[in-house]
Image 1 (cartoon, rainbow, N blue to C red):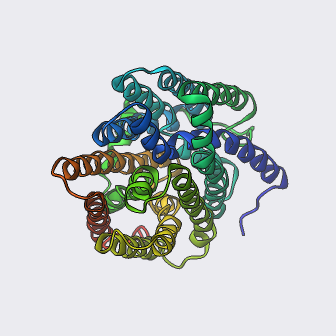
Image 2: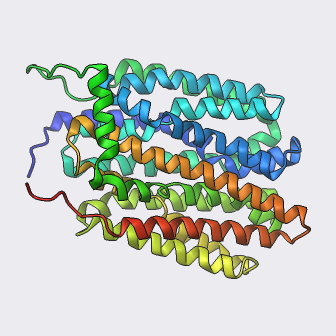
Image 3: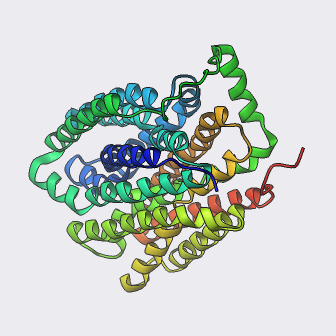
Length: 414
């Protein structure tokens, strides 16, 4: 049993509460796709392709910035990097709030993606600094599950209501102001780990950092994890985070208000699952089998909807709820990767997984938006477009899981 001093436990709880408040507002931006898709289509007249591009821009930017962010985390620390990049995210939220053109909306979302692209990794690394190795995933999953769940809930029916009353500009300017205030609080109250009076290792030079990043990327032990990383967030963010709103309105016939409530339930499912993966990861005999079981359930749920997209809501709702619960297996995949790298390279390994995952979000959101546009242009019914969405996500999950199935469970003994 690893000794975990009581003062470290108390400090970690305080830090997690503060980071959790911050993450609530980060998650509003990440989870608002379903509500914003309806709002931008109805109030701004954006096409499905435009909506997919605007929503996907944030995830594309987060993907682009992952490797540089990994270097910054390992070189300058998680808190410092989180705060500095967070200021850019605030600027992006302001631009999104005042944007009057599609490309300004895209640019605003792109800046948000750069600034907040490393938030979950920062939380994971700060937890690594304060908690024993066997508690890191649980601490991270608890924060992401609870705070992310609150943010995700706020990004559904409550956001729909606020947008209808206050409009896009006022709503997101308020989000920007609160996010900025929390960023400054984090700067002055959070540390990467307990202060130590012992000697500190000399920091890597820039060339050493680049060399270490290249070594992490090239590690054969991590390649299959990176492939699975393509689907650690893309399936839910493509369906629950973007097209579930139009699916509920166009296929299930719900009003925008009732659709936002359905989205709220999906987001609750996502964060219930995130929270549960913490203890599951800690006690599971095999991280790999846990991830593969989750993927199998995702494929089964989406298979039902691909075969029968017009299934009654009393079936579609529970199927999507189960899909949401099993989708967020990031902490399990991150822990699997962390077992293959030394602590000083953990930031680079995890952000490389994020790169794969966020690239997957951009690719799937853009591709599915084009698919729905194509069905509309050819005069097909809405359910055909959503059937293609479900099939594309199933294909991505299946191919990633087939590659990941050959991943070793643990590093080979020296």
